[in-house]
Length: 79
Image 1 (cartoon, rainbow, N blue to C red):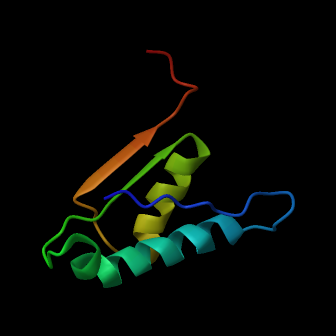
Image 2 (cartoon, rainbow, N blue to C red; image 1 turned 135 degrees about the vertical axis):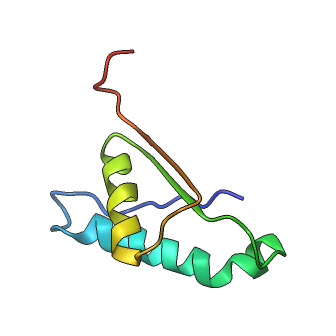
């Protein structure tokens, strides 16, 4: 299952609105993973691209979890 976070963007919303939104969704997913996946041992991971990667990594620290899966990318890096 994938849960997408439509976090609030700047400049309309002041810092740290995007982190607050993403943290709330990760906490919700952790609290409800058994109902969402019909499995209490379901894996919760984070992913993000560019600014979303920064938000995903930061949320792991805010929630104080070490995700089983994280996918963080940046379009600015040459391949």
